[in-house]
Amino acid sequence: MAVFTAPPQFTALDGRREIGRTDPSLTEKVDGPRLLLLGGRSWKVTWIDWKRRRCFVEAADSGGRARWHTPGVGGAGFALARAARDVLLGTDPAVRLTQRAQRVLAEFARISASPRTLAER
Image 1: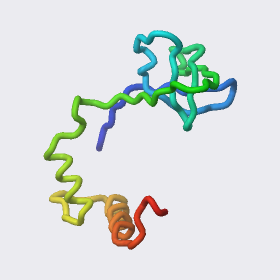
Image 2 (image 1 turned 180 degrees about the horizontal axis):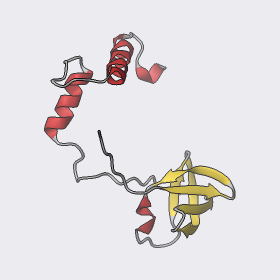
Image 3 (image 1 turned 60 degrees about the horizontal axis):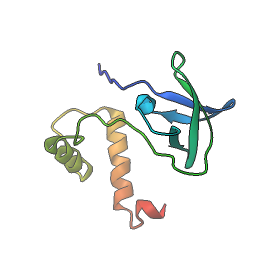
Image 4 (image 1 turned 90 degrees about the vertical axis):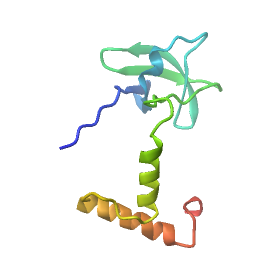
């Protein structure tokens, strides 16, 4: 069994149209309008429904910021980052993998071995 925890996300709506989801950084104090960057556009938050975890937005000309909470100051520690790197480079991990994990790693290895880079895809 595995358990994952994450802060609640707010659904951003332009009228009835869902734009995307954002981190609860909506609670941060800001000077001036609260601007978000979602779906490649800037949005001004007009109202927050805390109970339903929704925020209503309208298009803004610019100034939106992507806001996502990152646990810890530096992200993953060196040992974890190095272990992930080693596995992605082909080292067999010292743990039993699910069939799904084996398939994903095999697909990653296949793509990585291709002469075309991911940016070209």
